[in-house]
Image (cartoon, rainbow, N blue to C red; front, side, top):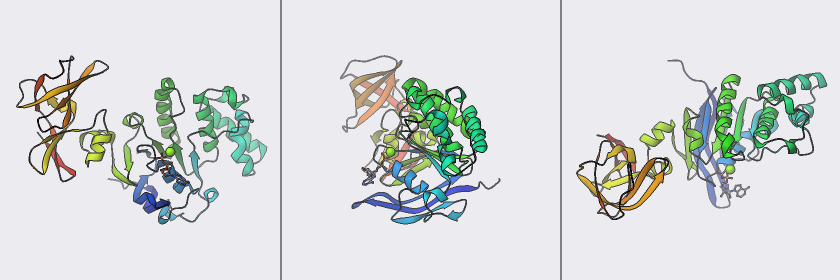
Length: 328
Ligand SMILES: Nc1ncnc2c1ncn2[C@@H]1O[C@H](COP(=O)(O)OP(=O)(O)O)[C@@H](O)[C@H]1O
Ligand SMILES: [Mg+2]
């Protein structure tokens, strides 16, 4: 197996705001050419972490390595890492062309080079026809592409995207995700993007880092986060519903997803509390006799209060705060 090259490495990053460590001894390796997602609820320090990588926030301790070089003390303009902000941060009084050209002008490129780079980035992102439009007149999706084009012309070492889809219409989000995936492949560059929405990670990345409490709780494929969460927090955060638990003894429970249970002639039972329809699937929120809430699923609503028998075809054995292995 060929060794993957590490593009970015964070070692023991800690960042305090007041007395609170928003980022707490965090480690991370991102590989060359990877599209890596950082997923976590609002306020968990995702933007702060990107700012530390790009150099506009300083960590209180820890180091940032790019291509094996310690860049912790380099100013942002010496790092050559592009960051696309959640707001896109375009200049409203400039047209699309001048927005994309701006960083090249600052870097004193000559006019001909600027023109070549702007047009080629615009072509790559499919915004050639709006180059002379005012940025206030273009759609959200086009604004995002302008912001990406502006990052791209600098030929950065890697890209950081903060909540890149959150300012887009729900309608265009899906295609925007596919486009980003394609762009990243085409550029063969390293991308990190941040989101609080797990749906934006399920079909896009090979690895997702789940951030909470200042640390990555788990770094894994989305499938593994869902099927083999390392701890209860991840099991609860990932998926449409928190993971369900059935107590087996004082220290051991079985954790499961709705589709891991079948509801015919089972040896377990629970009382239905609420029916919840999601598309054409019916979820039953039920209470076990120990009083914990679990989620089962079936093909139609049932009467509240009725007893539902089920059995588990698959479960994760949970002991003292961590999942041990999957049982059957
Ligand atoms: N410059 C700052 N000064 C003080 N507190 C901050 C600053 N930036 C962020 N915070 C706080 O740090 C926490 C993490 O913020 P942020 O990185 O923006 O989270 P996220 O991007 O995950 O929503 C929040 O509680 C936020 O209020
Ligand atoms: Mg943020």
